[in-house]
Image (cartoon, rainbow, N blue to C red; front, side, top):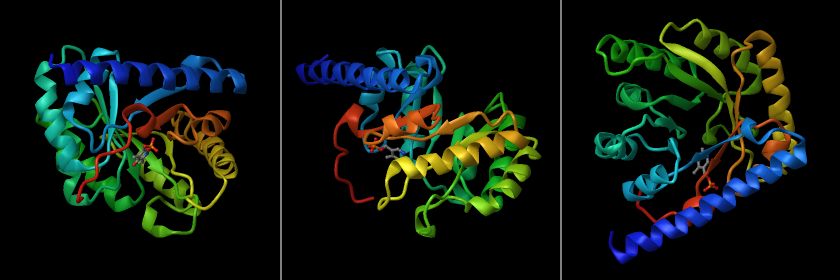
Length: 245
Ligand SMILES: *Cc1c(COP(=O)(O)O)cnc(C)c1O
């Protein structure tokens, strides 16, 4: 390794330990077992070399938000990984990208419309038939906690119908909910609403046990409100490099 690569590996090891300690402390404060909350490192905009370092440190799941960038990284890294990695698509997804994503995604966390769900179901079916994947595509419904439709997410009122649609799709597995709290509100009240929606959803779909909530700045609040997956980018990898896209 170059000196730069060695320094980056040391930096990421330290940051990973700090984020893991935060999650453990948040679980302890909420009276939850530490194993109930998993860390999803969010590696968007960061190079594949950072993912390789985190893999060597024991991470086996990663979140990416842009199809092209993710497809390139998965293609580059997969031949060198001896153990399976669960790649999560967490960003807004256009239907015409469903085919590419269904080839590598373990989970898509950002499903917010019946049209996208139908496209992913068809794409996952093709990928299963072609032997490109071996299990149904796990899907989290992204729910909107604000009134700005630009940020993505299904309105809470439309959530039950979309959940039923996904549960009935043969190549999809309804795994739970995901949300990003509104920019202008207290994360605590947003996560409390999310927790209520999740409890309701599990009443009709008991298998939808995953709750993806919490990022670098608000993971403690999310863990207090039932998160099972915290998506952490900045606290783990540092500020994202500026890009044009
Ligand atoms: C980028 C991103 C994150 C990570 O945010 P940080 O504040 O950097 O931890 C989490 N979730 C989604 C959907 C993202 O796009």
